[in-house]
Length: 328
Image (cartoon, rainbow, N blue to C red; front, side):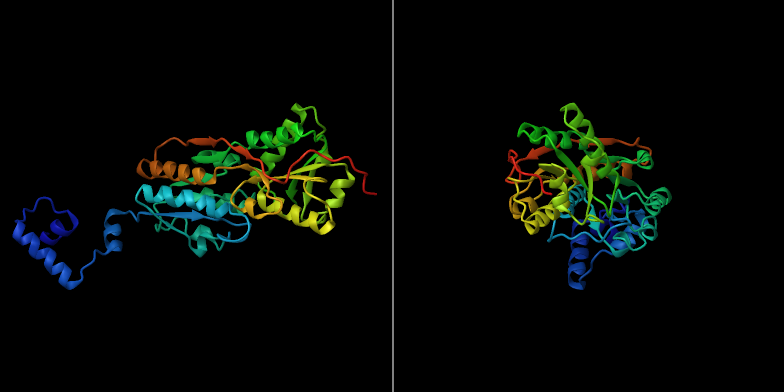
């Protein structure tokens, strides 16, 4: 009890003189004593650790290659966790290998879920999770029972449409990856149709194109339908369009303007530099942690649903359309 009082600020009922306390500290230094965190956590029923859940349906995200979505999001999550005194853990079972096994086994005080892939196994894992949890990009009815943080997809896509319309584009496409449709990409596609109609621009079924499946980023198909601009549902998809355009000899932006969504540092590495809707991923990650810590401290808290505004970062991949002949 004396040692606990001196080294852990516990056993408050024990009174220890200054000389005795100093002898305890000297002995601890000489013996190399360190507090057993696991034993302490077992007693408090807290781990002081937050897990980031990848879920099922797509590959492990990379930090330092390709789009910087995950690294930007993790910056906010880590900063927020450290601010509240928590560690952050990524482990294989949370990165796509049966994450349900790790979500409720007591190793985490709370979880951040950021996967919106519309797969039943993901919904089942959420439904069966007993740990405090916050959902990033929550779009489905099943997410409504949890606190959520999401960007203002409608506003962001609207900024892209208004920018292109202001450059005199009239035939604009919205491109999705035909191999992976998630809840948020569907929200953005719906917003595209609404804002095109508000601008008095055509937004028929042919304006929504699914590249990367059977079409395999068929840029000439876009041009043959008179599209002079395309808004991609994220920066990685936009980068694939840029590469396909270069391979096909299509000049960006003079023949085809391209807009992405996320606007991380990745956009500065592309040629031309990519105009993109800025989704404040670091802020979103930090807000998710703020919500999660509230839930951890008071599990009866009502779910909060935060919507974060976007902006448009204009770079070199958009300009006014050129008059050109149709590709036959």
